[in-house]
Amino acid sequence: MLLQVEAVSRYFKLARGRMLHAVDEVSFNVDGGEIVGIVGESGSGKSTLGRLLVGLGSPNSGQIRYNGTVLPREYSARDRLRMASEIQMIFQDTRGSLSPRLTAVEVVAEGLIIRGENRLNAHNTARSWLAKVGLDHSLAERYPHELSGGQRQRLGIARALAVEPQLLVCDEPVSALDVSVQAQIINLLYEISQSQNLAMVFIAHDLSLVQLLCDRVVVMYMGKVMEQGDAATVFRQPGHPYTQALVSSSPQVRQIEDSTAQNHQPIPGEVQAPINPVAACRFADRCSKAEAKCHSQPPPMIALSEQQSVACHLV
Amino acid sequence: MSEPLFCIDQLQVGFPSAQGTVHAVRGVSLAVAAGETLAVVGESGCGKSVSFAASLGLLPQGQPVELSGSVRFDGVEILGLKETSLNQYRGRDIAMIFQDPMAALNPTMRIGDQVAETLRVHQGCSRGVAMAQAHRLLDQVRLSNVADRLRQYPFELSGGMLQRVMIATALANNPRLLIADEPTTALDVTTQDQILSLLRDLRAERDMALVLITHDLAVVSQMADRVAVMYAGEVVERAEVDDLFTQPRHPYTQGLLASLPSSAGHQLPMAALAGTPPNLLSPPVGCAFHPRCAQAMNICARREPEVVHGLACWLQQKNREIN
Image (tube, rainbow over all chains, first blue to last red; front, side, top):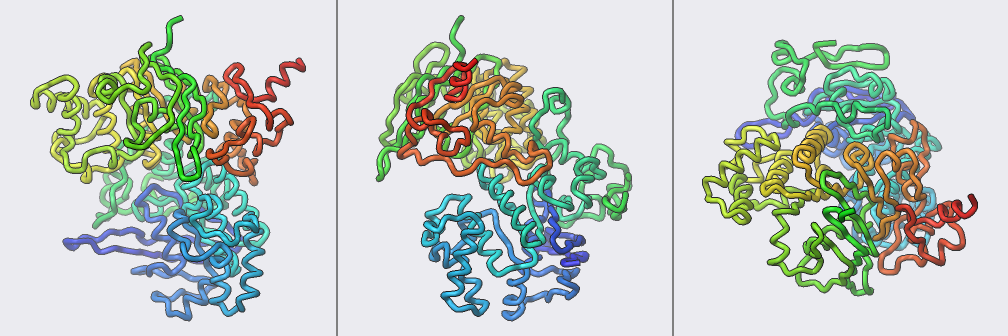
């Protein structure tokens, strides 16, 4: 197992003694070469979780194992250097996550130089990565602001992959892009994952994208995992009422014979912030099937099959 | 046959820039009838928002803009009218909602006062009457705890609630045309679902014309009666919604549909369009899509296709000649 996330929690202290449980006892695994999707609405903790995986912030409890070794809670400079060659990340905001003072080739070469390569080699390797992600060599000397959003995301991917990581964490990598560009980037990520046997954690709110790209999926709501399992199974037969609601409210291109899209009822209410949550199912207030114990006991994670587990009292 | 409620005819909008004129809208014609939902779909920079903002005189003030063509509401020409004349329509017969309700609402004004303001301005209601009316409107858009919300400020409400407030404000004067510019793009899917369902119900109840400006084809398929697909400042295809999704005719529309993850048939790689939209400082000669079109012919790079049966593409015209 490449990555094992074991009961990881991340809390943020707020004013007046309140505590935001952004990520609450989340567990999942990622195998080598596997693509795992993390889906959820805003505030579900999926981005915080992604940041924990690359050492941006440390868990309050629980642990993350990488290749069997527990990652340190606080990274030393040496830890960071070592882990940066193993786990890399790409971001939604391609402008904010690239230095405005470095040209495209310098952005990619920087990590290689830090790792100890000489400048000439680093630049040569960087140029070959720019070509691999489909950036024309005429763009190598441009600054990030001179590139389009799609080109900047390609640059972010080249930067991340140049140090040859085993795992790439992608935080909403295409949600700021137009659909035609989005498809190009998804194809690129897919081709790279195939050719480099790269494992990915793919954080997204777009279910159809996750269904298309990912082998397995983790569904989060208010900091908790609601359901996880094989992507095709979870989306075809969602076990948790929240996953069911998410699937039915995600806009799909309506099929002509399909009139359900017109008739279905949206679920009521909105996502709340998990501040000082009570011990209960976090979805209970919005769940049409909720019973008394849903409001009084947190549900355990129950395996429906080898491919699917659900945190729900009612399964 | 009488003219539809709202018609845009051969609209051209250009913005001057240091490098020359940016031709943002290049001869757009659109129409929407009462009780109908028209979706205007396209990627960023295709001119979909600018077309409507320009039609209603909502482009940034004080900036020289090249503007020509015709925009008629209920048979009356409104393009280029003075602010005071336009205000006879805006907020009254024609209402608009935007993607970012936080930016569209006044942050220092209570929710109740904001909704009431539009009633007081346009209908001359007293404060008390307007407030009671605001309460009723916010109930209609299914805002929760309306009595409390009336006294709250925008920052105290979530994005979904604010979008409901925006819709209530837009509906206050019983508009005959509602223009919704990416109304759910900033919202979570479960909230988006609620807002779209609300818009669908309100349109049916009020026999309003609804223009939905969006980049999301899945939303289009669930909401629209008719669709206009825009590319590089032009309408490239107009069709009934079912026809567009079952038989997209323009290569750009076909490419857009193929780029949707949900229509990829669970197969990767997706059939993505190559390249990016053109720079509107100097749009390509001929069909603006030809540099990205896999089926482009010689004529596509030379002459702009005419619009025939709602389609601006030389391929169809060639096929018709062959048949």
